[in-house]
Amino acid sequence: MTKVLMGLMVHKFCRLKWLNIVGFLILIIAIIIFIAKPEFTQTHHEDTYIATVDGVEIHISEFQRAIQANRAGIINYFHEKYDAAQSAAFWSTPYGNEIPLELIKKKALEDSMNLKIRQILAKEQGVLSDISYDGFVHNFNLENERRQKAIKNHQVVFGPAQYTEETYFEYVMGNTTLSVKNQLMDHDWKPNEQQLITFYEANKSRLYDAPATVKVRQLSLSFLDASRNVDPLLKTQEKKKMEIAREKISSGISFEQAAKDINQADQVSEQLYNLDSYRHNARSPVAQASANLRPGEVSEIVEENGHFYLIQCMEKGQKGSKYLAFDEIREQVLKDFIDNKYEEYIRERVTDAQVVLNEELYRKFQM
Image (cartoon, rainbow, N blue to C red; front, side):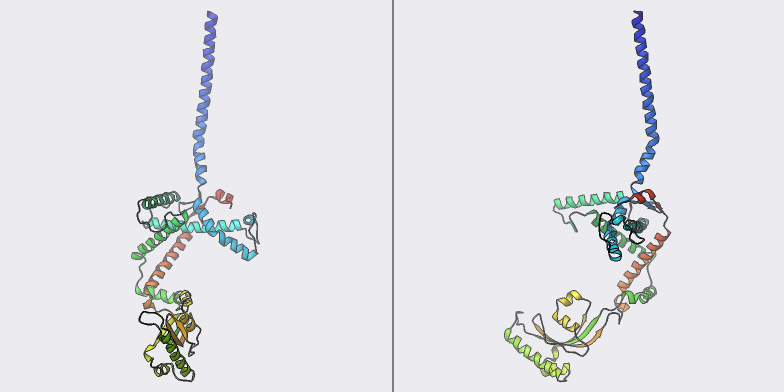
C-alpha cells in the first residue's frame, strides 16, 4: 500500500513538473512573438510604399501605375537611340551608360512624386479628404458598385458602366485639378487685366499664333430645285455661266466684273478658310481648292453640295505671320494663365518637397 502511494505521488510530481515546463515554454514563445510582432508589422508595412513626400506615402501600386505609363516611352527611347530590341534581358541590359530598368524607375518615381504633390495640394484646398491609395481603391469600388446598382434599377449612368482603376484615376484627378485651379483663381491667383495682357504678350508666339488661312472671293451658283434636289437642266445652264465667267477673268476682266456680266454679282462673297482645319477641309472641295491657290489666282470650277464655285485667292496668311487678338481670346488667355500658374506652383512644391526613399524596395523592384 505504501509503495502504491509512493508511486502515485512520484507520478503526480512528474506530471506537474512536465506541465510547468510546457507552460514555461509556451510563455517564452508568447514573449518572443510579442517582441517580434512590431518588427513583422513594420516589414510588411515597408513593402507597401516606395517613398514618402512631405510625410505622405507613395504606395507601391501608385509607383507601378507610373511604371506602366512610362513603359512604352522607355522602350521607344532605347529603340531609337540604341536600336535596342525587346527581349527577356532588355530591362537589365546596359546600353551606353543607361539601363532601361533604372531609367524607368527614376522617371516613375519623379512622376509619382509630382502626382502626390498635386494630391497634397488638393487636400490642402479641401478638394480631397483622403489622398491615400487605400482611400482611392475604396472610393473606386464604391463608385463601381453605385453604377452597377443604378444600371440594375434602370437609372441613367453617365460615362462607362464600370470604371477600370486607370480610367477612374484619370476621372478623379481631372476633376480634382480643375477644382483646385478654380478655387485658387477665385482667391490667391485671380489676375488683373494687366497681368493677363503681360502673359499674352510673353506667350503669344507660343500659344496664340493665328492659324494658316486663305482669304478668297467666290462666286456661287446653285443648281438645286425648290425641293433641294439636283435639277439637271439648271445644272447645265449654271455650269455654262461659270465657264463664261472664268473665260472673262482669264482674258483680264476683274472677278467682280465677270460676275456682273453674267448677272450674278449678288452671288459673290468673301470667305476665310482655316488651313489648319484638316478634318473639315478634307470634306470640302471648295476649301481644298482655296488652299491650293496663290494670291490673285483663280480656281477651276468646283462642285460642292449642289453648287458650282469659282474662287479667287485674295490673300494667304502663313501660320505664325499673325497673332490672335487678345480681346477675341481673353477667356482662353485666362485659362492658360491659371494653368501656367498651377504648373509653376507644382514645380516649386516638388523642388522644395522632403522625399524619403524606401531604398530597399526601390533597389529590389523588377519589371
